[in-house]
Image (cartoon, rainbow, N blue to C red):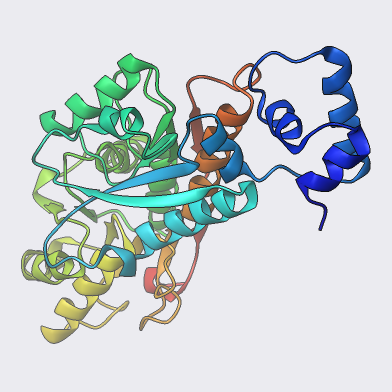
Length: 340
């Protein structure tokens, strides 16, 4: 592998000069700069991104900030593991480091200090919500014009960079699938209301019913918190309302799996007694009994895209956008839980 010493020898300069040219540090004669760049090109020399960052007073790290939730194993959840895998792939390919940090969701997090102390050059925020303490930290990041991105959560501030999935359309297509099969009484088990993607799912659910000429019945709309336990607990009111339900749409696979487990414990046959459509298309979706009809969300691609755009901004500030706004499409995966 070519090293800096070989580049310096071919260009007829010192290694320090090679370092200054490739890191863009200090004044330099144009002829010297051209000789170094030509030598690096001929030798196919690639500057290590981390070393370059330190030379410029940077950390060489992309930070990922996650919520700390006691007794919740975040890394075992499909949502977080897929997002982190996508982020990790982009970081690896760009030669950057990855720094994971946890925040208390109930307390305003000082994101700006991460940059001030050179712990990170950019950061991605996972699991953000619209509670006041979360918004305060996110809005300060935006006001400072720092490179960051929020995953899968919308904010009113137009300066907040976001990469998300189109959850409204994904939910619409899930409910539309049940309607097209002739089911009219469709319940909904949604996630926590402080997340914009929960509201987007609710909007898609309501729009599908409205387009079919069906009035939304709030009495068959249930609330969980995206955990398997909350789905199992929801089985109690859902079973109580079983005579009024043909089918139910659930906001993620974990809640759907918990719901089906709870319903079976009460003697419910699935999908004979109740059709179920879920959301995420996690690894478990195809191996449940019955296999879940679910909406596939490209979490891995979302994580990779967010990291790539941030790192591109760091490396080429003039050509990359200051605010990221990307919405990726979902895809319905049809299996037996919806009666197919």
